[in-house]
Amino acid sequence: MAKKNKINVLVLCGGPSNEREVSLKTGLQIAKSLPKSKYRMTLAEITKDGRWLLRDGIQNALGTSKALIPTGNDPTLRTFDVAFVGMHGRFGEDGKVQALLEMMDIPYTGSEVLASALGMNKVRTLELVGKYGIKTPRLIALRSVPTKKDLIALQKKIGRSFGYPCVVKPNESGSSIGVSIVRKKDDLFKAIKKAFNEDTIVMIEEYIKGRELTCAVLGNTGFGTLAPLPPIEIVSGGEFFDYDAKYSSKNTEEICPARITKAQTKKIQALAEKAHAVIGCDGLSRSDFILTPRGAFYFLEINTVPGLTEASLAPKAAMAHGMPFPKFLDAQIQLAIAKKRGGLSHPLRTTLT
Image 1: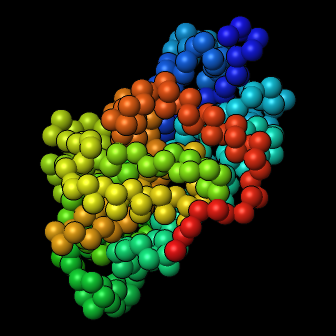
Image 2 (image 1 turned 180 degrees about the vertical axis):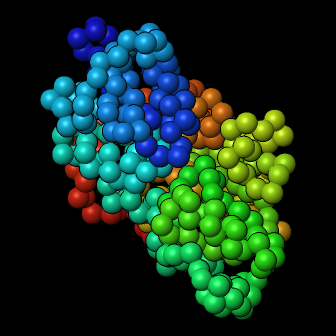
């Protein structure tokens, strides 16, 4: 393919969220792995204060050459054929950067504005998927740190609703940052304060005992067939799959395909597809589940911009499916282009019953 016919891709990474470092790794991995015969790559690192640093080509992306753009609303950005969103957490995964790209009429990978915002909001996601028959943990949402009196009432409510242990987590945060497993009521307040350091809404969730699994899905909701990837079983070696277990622990095992039966594999894939469609996701999503000893799957959350580093789960699932990383990236870009051509208001064709 001649250079002039290459697809001009803007890879977005960085941003102000607490997952910035993971996003930078994702962006570099995408930039290094895009098929050079088909794509011309420019990496855009968004700084914590909202500046855009554009680096043309992978050599400059890894070096010091920078072209500074004061804001994202620059005419230069309109020259790109498609944006590959490699940003996690706030601004990158919650619909904000997607809205910016919409205003500039640039096709982009992943879910559109509403689905991104909804998927980032764990409370709303659990409420919605639960209405479609997907099992979810019971939860209590908090909008402020409880007073001493409120804390006593909250401890009693937890005891009546689902008891201990329970899980305390920020509503809108990723990579398990700010998450605690609380095994006794005396530890509840500390966990709540920790979670409120990351978000303005905190959820206290029923602890579901079982095996941790995740399942990725490729496809645009309402356009063609969704394609679930092989599920992955996660053995963290700790209390749960926290930030250290995800990115630095040598004791974490990620087993793909997961050690479950064929029937269970079909079940979790169907549930991941259903969650993808219920939220209205496009491109790639990854849903996390607990498989209980009695064989029930409980949905925990959906990731609308899963990590794409060498250590990330979705690329491992794609490889197990026979899709090398460059082909996996190519599939996401093609879904982004197809989404733009097809429009965003197409009626939902996927059955949700």
